[in-house]
Length: 242
Image 1: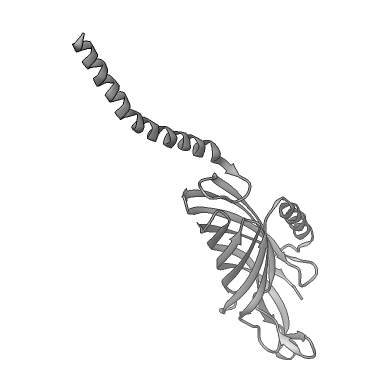
Image 2: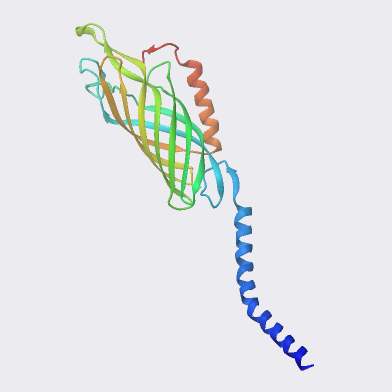
């Protein structure tokens, strides 16, 4: 009898000692299950790794020329009360479609396809390119991106006799790098550094300032813009923008 009572007391003591450990592991397991069920395989808008394994990119960006290479001063056009030399690399609007994979809690990698145009002249000039992108998440909503890419870009050249030079743009492969600061994959600001040869032995460069938006509405607008550019843009290598 005393032996049975002693075993019972020892078993009870073991259960009481083990119960805090079990209680500690149970919430941890529950939290892991919740995290796993909360993470989606794919999101249509950018989210960190805790929310999405991968996500899509749908962006409409306007890149405005800030400073860089100008054409020969003899190639000018009327400005506000004066004449100005044209930019060798013009301001442009583009659509980026792609996807990124969250490789860490605060980092993602991916790439985009680029389509767009320059609408300063009529008809518009078509653009196309590709870019690789790295994203750093600073918070669930705030992020910064670095991109490296190449684009078929109209590069300005001056043609014709010295007393009657004319502006022409020739499509060439331009290399670029972007720095972007975004909020919730809805709005962002960016800078772009672009370098390209003009086919005449000169290297052109430009710094652009940009603003982007991303949403289902953006995707619809972007699609309409892309159709407009493709339908109206000229074919061939040389295209006159002015």
